[in-house]
Image 1 (tube, protein in one colour):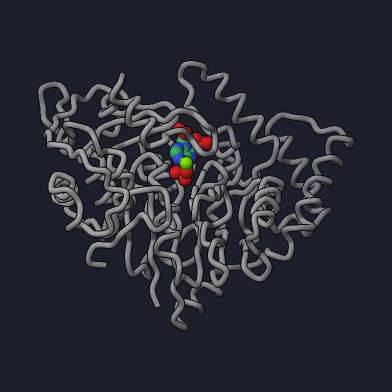
Image 2 (tube, rainbow, N blue to C red):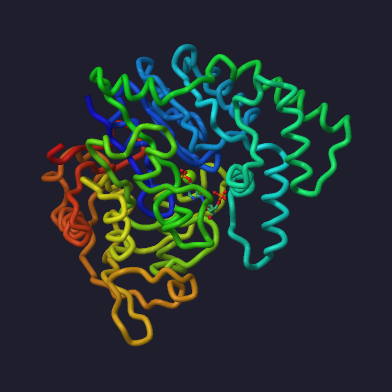
Amino acid sequence: MSAIAILGCMWGDEAKAKIVDYLGDTADYVVRFQGGSNAGHTIVVEGKKYVFHAVPSGIMYPGTKCMIGCGMIIDPLGLVNEIRGLEASGLKFDERLFIDEKVGLVLPLHQELDAVNEERLASAKIGTTGRGIGPAYADMTARTGIRLGDLGHPAYLKQRIKELYDYHGQSLDSKALKEVMAQLDEAWQVLEKYCGSIETILSDAYLSGARIIFEGAQGTLLDRSWGSYPYVTSSNTIVDAVGIGSGFSSRLLDEVLGVFKSYVTRVGEGPFPTEIHGPLADQIRAQGNEFGSTTGRPRRIGHFDAVLGAYSARLNTLDGIALTLLDVLSGLEELKICVGYELNGKVLITPPAHPLELSKVEPQYVTLQGWEEDITGVRSKEALPANAQIYLEAVEDLLEVPVKVVSVGKERDQTFKIDM
Ligand code: IMO
Ligand code: MG
């Protein structure tokens, strides 16, 4: 038996799903425990691309069961469409998908509120994915949210929906209420068979020897409590969210693997100390195809930041690092790694929590030599160019965590393990 959490450790888009897929061929369960369709998890197998938003990426392996924990929030019709789309590309869901009946729902109201909030904030906007994530989580916290299990109780559901609209100062006439109810019923017709309680299944499976992977979404720097607030998502993303969002206590995890890009990206607004502007950023963006898989937005690009990296490694008690997109750095003459921040004449080795301070820090860099070689065919650490090995070891030393998996391309097999 084993339980491993695979977590994004920066601002999301670290290629978590690729690592889940690479390590997931023998997984009995893959579990999502936070976030919703703001996630855009991409897997490429033999040139064919699969994108997952709410469905755990373990659905790729026919023998793996997939779970949506109650720490997530789901848009019911969006999920139905996602399932239909994946079924059309040949993936099977029957007896394989389990959704916790306690999971909160994202309704069209939440997507509207997300857009209105962003518009109101204008130049101070968060740059959300527009999927209604913040407002839906806010309703769950305010106890005004609707949960998947409510769809099985229409009279109760109708009352809860009226109360929800009331709470937001919106009136819903009987025609509009009927429409909302009809849409939810349409989703329920598809989702009912997947809906139940997952926590006992998971702990029983673990005790009887199952291999379980917890698939994180977003990343530590987008964590609602520990990220670069307020430019964060509305869920907790760090390792402790596993227990809260799935019912499988984080204490039982055997391993925590943190996924880091070999450089840094961020979509949306907010401080980004090592951000690069100009031709170098354009080159990395083009080589790494750094455009959002949920929104298509160009991602901001930066140098590897070992200050934020070490912060994330500590918070998540990482056992290992999966270093991704290393191939993208091929051809760069020099590579910089941020090893400290200077703020008001003082050198910091931990990040300041206040956004006004984090946006003012001066990164202190070490500069390493790059490598020319195309490394997309490399399958061992020893076969990497010497400078790539030095870069990888610098990341290990600065974060004090060993690199256990390296990704050198989009394809499933463009990946290798180190002492794992
Ligand atoms: P995956 O799982 C990258 C960012 C948004 C925005 C902030 C808040 O693919 O790594 P939200 O819609 O969650 O309220 O937006 O969080 N964000 C992500 N950035 N990858 C993601 O997911 C993200 N999910 C949310 O860009 O800055
Ligand atoms: Mg993404």
